[in-house]
Length: 273
Ligand code: HPA
Figure 1 (cartoon, rainbow, N blue to C red):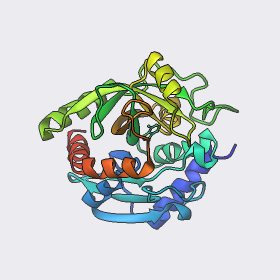
Figure 2: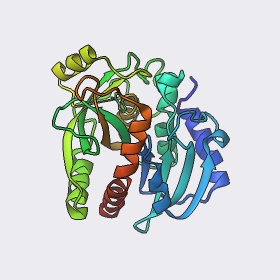
Figure 3: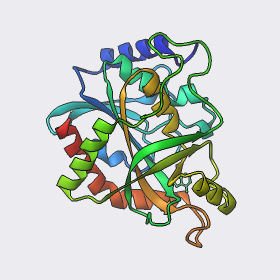
């Protein structure tokens, strides 16, 4: 199958051929507007997604589309700035392919971030939220089809976000003085933002955050038994909650404002690993 274990090995070999990669302690996926973190990496070496087989160029504003290897807090990491999303026409297994590639590089710890709309009325724009659990409403699952080598057929999702890594994120946030809430993330296909009626539905379903990424990545990570943790940046109140329309430009501005606290949080997290 495309975007499976063999393709991941091939992509990992290309990355190793083009960049010096040792044994990174983690991969970090950077959501919309959060790509500034790459600037914190030392000895950075970058590769465009267009040079990695199986990766797609990212066409969305705020998503650079580069893989960078470097050190953060003195420890080697891989940063993925930008995603290819299902709403751009990618199937779930393609959207989650970078997770397989990180696994093929020998990485077992994944920190993901995203921009999300706040469903929980107490989440103001600019709030960082540790993802506690997820609801996959994208309408697809990245594991459908034959079982990939190394995958579980029926992965357990009773703790898709690693309690061990969550504790480290909480400790890191406390140490750098960044307020952190917790909540459930619901992933939808997009590209539209929700209607107010959908927002009420999602609140009723138990979600605190809504976005268009991440859930497929968490599922592939579970199938590969990787440790996975996620942080959402609330860039806006979900539709109907503020009286304002939801606009991608505002999402980007809010992400830019939160970049410093987010960067400090991630750097301390890596130090604590
Ligand atoms: N809904 C869905 N995805 C989002 C939102 C939103 O309100 N804000 C940022 N990503």
